[in-house]
Image 1 (cartoon, rainbow, N blue to C red):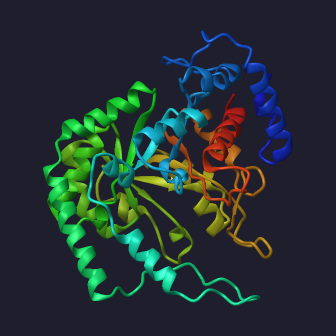
Image 2 (cartoon, rainbow, N blue to C red; image 1 turned 90 degrees about the horizontal axis):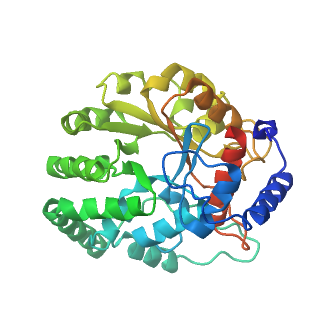
Length: 364
């Protein structure tokens, strides 16, 4: 069956119904239909992964992955990430540096505790009042700031003393489950010393990743380019709404070094500009390391402009993006970033799994 008949605007009810039917059929397949190895799975083989524990999310030549930020709110650690990837059928990930470092024994970050204290001190909204807007960076008390400063020093000491053999062991643990890390979000812009930036690239390389990622910035590009060049991996910058800002261009950032690339968020780009993301992808395909996928409304959509949506219910042309990458055979990773609200009867792992199936039906 030609799955490309599934248009971008297919209804979620139809899509899920067909996926459930495929899953029901797959339960009768023998365990020999494993996705282990380099070959791409058939849809039925992919559905059988839940029983075999093997994962393969490369469909029609396009590597589908997810940023582990998508699993926020769930218990962390590499063992849990492996479990989530197996349940969602993900064989490649953009790994959050915080997830990795916590698994390796990093000092506990006090920020979550401090933010919880601040939220607890805020008065609850009265009946009929709107909830308070999302918390911005607060002004810390001297005691809180001292705790943060101590954490930063402890973190630096821990990072510079970390045995890379532990990182390689983490890479092997993921590899044993059929999961590779193609990019690590180490956020070197937050690191105050050159030694820590060097550490960030060492860790990414030890994890087998081809790039480090951070938020897009010309200043950061200039600072980190020498480290990317030294270690032979890329620095891929992620965008939010910058392309909608007057005068913004990624050209000066890319001009800093051939080691500078884009971790292009097609959803944020479309949601803030209304421009078809394929225009950017065609122009910069040789400087795009990975693409973040999400469904959104456009910037002029009624009362809900630039708003995250369940895949298939928004206006972001996900199918067009995937088919372009497939048609041109560009080696660009395409990653799910789950940001829409999850209903109480579901969870982020189930939703990421549904997004994986959605992408597969476009590509196969």
